[in-house]
Image (cartoon, rainbow, N blue to C red; front, side, top):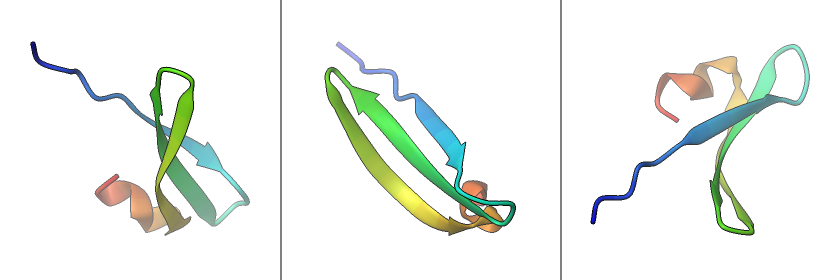
Length: 41
């Protein structure tokens, strides 16, 4: 069975973002930083 990964993003401020993944009832923080962090979530 193959698991499909969904990565979400959220804005902290105009220049900062973070990405996270939801697994069941857990939210897993992946990366946080300036806007360019989304180039490779």
